[in-house]
Image (spheres, rainbow, N blue to C red):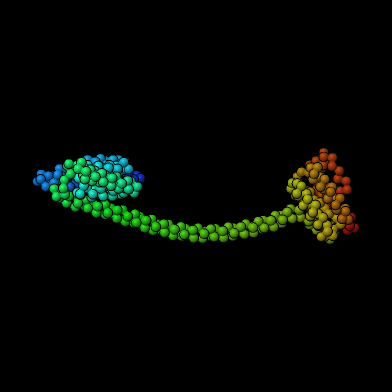
Length: 366
């Protein structure tokens, strides 16, 4: 039963704030409707017995349709509009009731309920507006009663039963409103505490995540530093290997005390030609050679650039006081040199390495 009533008073809203206001509206409507209905029932019985006027029953039962209208609007999401209906309805009933029976009765409780309802459902400025309206209405009715312009005004003794019921039920409504306010404040306090707890958990998780991230960054930095060092070492090793390969690509071979052989193998480009020139001159100086045999048996093609480099090598050899002998000229290479019109003047040529060594021995008197 309690769950069914809870489903009646809990609106289905996607907006949490609107759902909260709707839930509060339905609680207030329930708190007003039940005492109002009971007041109307007691007043009707008192009227039948001649103990109270009919206005009490009319007031108690007359506001029920307005409560239903407010409930219907609230269930459809018109919470802000629905909040004004019970406030205005109760205020008008109180004004009409006081104008009917006069002041000095339990209508003051009704004005108090109007103010509290406006404060709970709408806002404080609206509640203050109804404070002003209630005061004006009460003073106006009282002034009219004093002036004798309210012939229907009744003495309190004639409405004792109705006033007692109104007082009891009105105070009950005030207690309910106080309970609602306390309940709402406690709920907000719990939400605040829960939000604070979640914020602390989030901060703790964030701190843990930050520490973990810093640790991962430190590990990654260390790994990158190690990788960088490995790459640097690998690059240095590659550079050394490349230097070794370059040195081996143009070897200088001493065959006699003062005779060296510098073979060329493969395609000769500008870089290899410079390397060849450097190796040749270093070999002449290192071995104090007087004869340098340049073997181009392994060179498949000789163009004008290669031929010029060979001529320059012979000239540089002579400048160092040595003699250059070119061996290993194949028929194709010889034909290419002739077609290019390159002069090998100053270069002694022999067919192969053996002939070049024999010539070197002969020139050295051996």
